[in-house]
Image 1: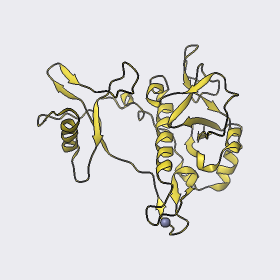
Image 2: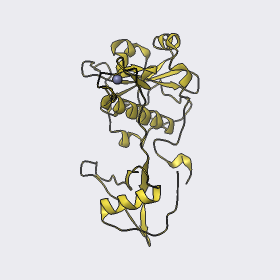
Image 3: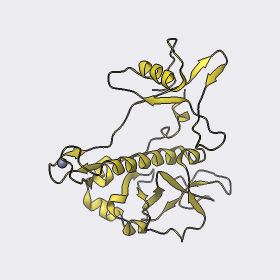
Image 4: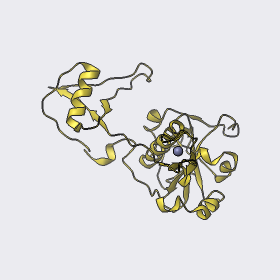
Amino acid sequence: MPVQDIPFSSASFDRAGHLRKDKDYLKSARRAPETLVMLMKDGAPFVSGARSDRSFEPGEPLPAGERTLYWIGAQILDLVSEEDQLFLGLNSAGEPMFAVDVPDSLPLDAIKDGAFEDARAAASFMSPIEASMTATARSIFSWRDRHGFCANCGVRTRIAEAGWKRECPACNAEHFPRVDPVAIMLAVKGDKCLMGRQASWAPGFWSCLAGFIEPGETMEQGAARELFEEAGIKWNGKCEYLFC
Ligand SMILES: [Zn+2]
């Protein structure tokens, strides 16, 4: 399966990890006119109803009215705490890219033509690289929300490395974003396949079954266990890898 067909991870961007600790660079990037910032709330990216003229890929032809990720200038970074910011990296022009988790206290009245939209739905019309950035920001902000206190001593943690690390001021423990391995499987029999959906999803949305791999499991064992847990199907047949 071509890598470019994998939603949310088909395009890579320059994460510029060496700049996350560079306080001088980050300070200037937070004020640079070329800096671009994407907006997120509860994991939902802000998308415009029409193509933004500050799109990440200015050369990409998009039809009029095409929806796309909305990018805003650096001035919004002055309005939110660093806890609500993530330095994503650099775009192909070397310009700084940030994501902001928009707090409730920050009104977005000035932006008329756009809305926060479910990330899965938005991935269907974003460019691959914007979908990748959306997935990155969503994952980091979610991790931040669930790791506000040190797992070692219980003290409140604080942001470090422009959002990519949390530190404990009491015991000096360093906390990094969790990455959980997942098996996503498509069970096939003859010319039929099995898919599922959550009741809360929009009409027409279906997904392969999937689940987290447990410690000590192989991907095949995890897929078989999840298939049984979610659909009651015992599988011991052939496994074909499409992407890993
Ligand atoms: Zn601690």
